[in-house]
Figure 1 (spheres, rainbow, N blue to C red):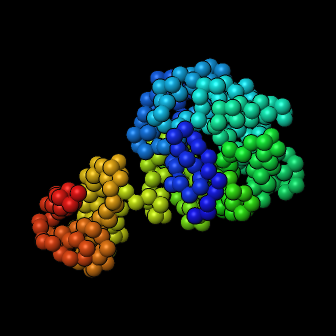
Figure 2 (cartoon, rainbow, N blue to C red):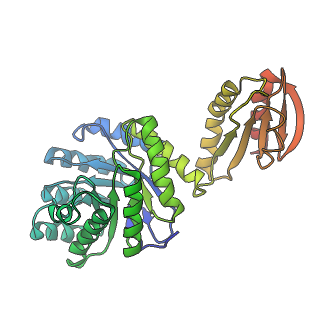
Figure 3 (cartoon, helix red, strand yellow):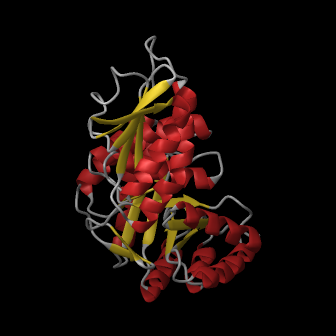
Length: 358
């Protein structure tokens, strides 16, 4: 992982080699105080570490202030601002732990100066956000269209605007819905700045399609060592964003707590309904996984295999596992068979074995 500069967002440190933090964004009406509070509670319960809230008008800014008081010390809240610098000032005054702006659309230099001055006085970072839909006309004219080079150049230019105002508590983000362009833009940006980078695929899409694009786009960046905070952007319940973000981090080896469930794809040798068996195992393991993650205990690898060929041998690295047969199946641990049990008891006995170990 590249070591970036470090900034503080509420009680969290971003960058500087600290663990990657998971963000999401509320999608209820920003003027709906009760709705916001309920959604923030659900997000934090799911494991969201930073919550971003759109502040489109002064009514929303007033609600943000009240919500911030309720969640002070519990989870950092970020105000997402576009166009009106006065909303940024109001959000900072309300106690925002960070503000997200695009300096190019916040107004003239004096308005940007006012926002930077307020952030400095309140000692909060500014996230400079650029995406494929917000590129400045000179950049588009230079490259002829939206490009990776243009995205990176726009972000660097906007960072420079704030640096010239003598402030460097900054986080930067550049996002595209094009996975390859997003990847290439981040490679350019990461090579040219040491500021913490917030990563994601913007407008990734619906739940299923968005997960695919996010897994590839975010996963590729993480494997390159790029990224200090992340968001999976889905047209779905934002809790789904958080749950899938955790899965991405686990699968690139950046989060260890919980349970890594592996299962084989089945073939003609399979004599058990492995789809049902694997789904039931996943469902019943969920509370155990949540407990392990919450308590920060070591992760477990659990295997659900279809036959003896893929069973204890191919799943030798699994801490625990089950292997289907014809009416009966195997319980195994670290490649060694523990015992044979009736098929209908496989999941029950697996859970007993896991629970006894923790």
